[in-house]
Image 1: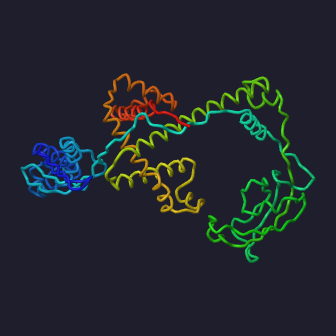
Image 2 (image 1 turned 60 degrees about the vertical axis):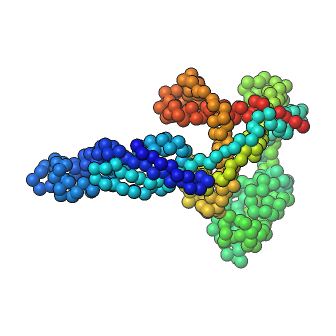
Image 3 (image 1 turned 60 degrees about the horizontal axis):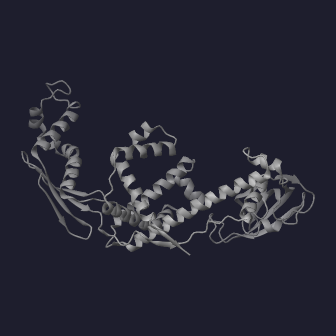
Length: 427
């Protein structure tokens, strides 16, 4: 196949290629077979009209569009391979010539992967990470477990910060109640900052049976735009005041929160081990992030294709909204409850998209520089790891991922390892 690549800009150019006549003919035949079953031609049973008769009646050109759609993907892929380029977006395709009995010539405007000039990515220095776990850390974690086991008990005394009040409330702006400003038997922990600023503080000192008038001003950036910046009065009735009753820190408490221990001392030791493992994992993650960030900064990318950043933004948005959908929250509902728009979400993902694209490009450049080899055994090990990680059958992983995808992921991990294994920590 005749293929010509003409670079025009830093990361774009024109790919001109021919689709051989024999490939065109196969595409025309396939196109005809697909449509003839629906053809009604006098004198022929449905689906039995000969190709020659079709050509006489409609012209072979009637098949060109369908035939091109059939043969173009493979032809373009072959042309890309022959030209030795790496497109990063869908091409803009134009038909140059589709003459009967001749090869078809196609012109594609292509954006290609930018050149990456690697800088230092080995023997990098990153800030030393603190892995220390103190007795205070253990006691703090133990206190959190104690808080989680606390029981709420009724109290007659006035409400204090940390207490929970059970209330009815109704909000008014200019003596008119507003949507979403009313509830009954609502449990509110004072000091949790879950209500409008100033609301909870005005209930400190209230007792069961009290009626309290709470005056607040909604923040200017409040998610409900019709309430933002508005002064409001809430009429509140306090039904109950409850305080937290903490369990004793003893062996029985230890067994209640963790059935693998028998004593409080054992629980403390286990908490310490978990904190040590958690700090070590956090330190390793921070080292990896800092080292990769340095490797990216040390590299040079002359010009980043805008389409790559655009695609990354939309990939992130789609993944985020898909996760929301899995929780039963539609995009429309998410925008409503968060007080944001699709444009706001787009801007949110724009901030990190360019960094992620650059990072992937640099890691891929390291893959090429290191020339990693991946064996069948490596691929099988990766399949087994993924199966264990996602609790899937190895066969299911195998059917979902191609060798090319698995090989790419393995090489990318090895490139990261090449950065990390020589990194040094300095205070």
